[in-house]
Amino acid sequence: MKSRIYTVDDLQRQEVQRDIQTTFQRGGNVVFPTETVYGIGASALNQEGINGIYAIKGRPQDNPLIMHLVDTTSLEEYVDVDQPYINTLMERFWPGPLTMVFTKKEIVPHYFTGGLQTVGVRIPGSDVARKVIAIAGVPVCAPSANISGRPSATLFKHVLEDFQDKVDILIDGGKSEVGLESTVLDVTSDTPVILRPGMITYEMIQEVVPSVQMNQEVLGEQTPKSPGMKYKHYAPKALLTIVEGNKDDVVAYINQQTKQHHLENQRVGVIVTDDVKHRFIAKHQFVIGRLDQDAEIASNLFAALREMDTLDVDYIYSLSFHQGSYSEAIMNRLLKAANNRIIKVN
Ligand code: TXA
Ligand code: MG
Image: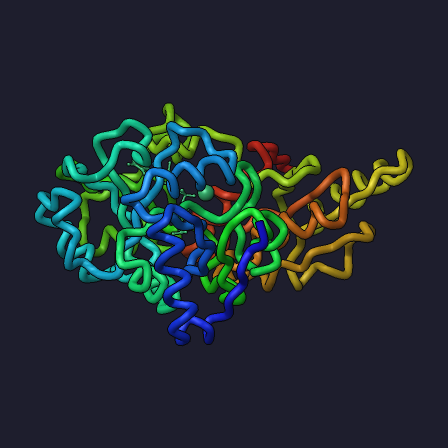
């Protein structure tokens, strides 16, 4: 198969719109940008297209997909909006990087819900994403566009790495603005529960729904309620270790490890912030942003992990990132990528 590649401007052209629409309707797949990460989409109403997503990503069948809508007009055709706080959340955070998990109605096909009676729904903030869903004319299921286990795609080159000539249509929307996947919030009971942290933070939700809880599994204390959380995630090929502590000790530790690995002819990459970038002896460095700019760090995190794969290093050391309101989501992804390997040096 040869993928057809379109730019955002191409979406204005009628023959491109027709191609996108028929591809969705015939059970094909379309990779498109959203404000969080790229998604690999299929019509929610076409089982062949959904099967395509699972097959191409190598995604386990029990991991459900989230459904993307253009707006809330048709929401209640698919799900029960039965908690009084849901409307407030929708008004405040939609369109945007928030996925809400509702009790599904019968009409929602079982083939993408992983056997659950619930379904995650999101109205993306990205105009381009909403344009694609509008062209599709159906709800669009879209997991993050990455081969299962790899870091999510936040640049079009990541999309090409994973999906060129494996997916019918790839839409180039440049860099994803947010860079981490949406916050997943269970809204099926009288207190909403965060299943996956994201840019819509606990504090932001708490402002409008004071009773909001953080799922124990996110805190690492329980078996996953969100099926996707139990799988290996975001993992680069090399062994990733997070090093935490005071700045001088962290630099010293990473340099000492690097020296050791070099003696063994191993390649080392480091993920560092702007303020300390000159202090590392490792040849391969990814400067992820400024220490106090959490939004910048979030938007570059997956690119950093993928870059390390491209550089073919054997060991990766990363600083930890605890400043700013996005740090919870950043550290959630980074810890998964590191399989919880974290060293505290002071
Ligand atoms: O930002 C995003 O959410 C991106 C863009 C493309 O919209 N999509 C995304 O999808 O990250 P995915 O499939 O990679 O992650 C969805 C997460 C998974 O961890 C999945 O297990 C969980 O949401 N999830 C989906 N449906 C669920 C449900 N009914 N109950 C609990 N968790 C659910
Ligand atoms: Mg994903």
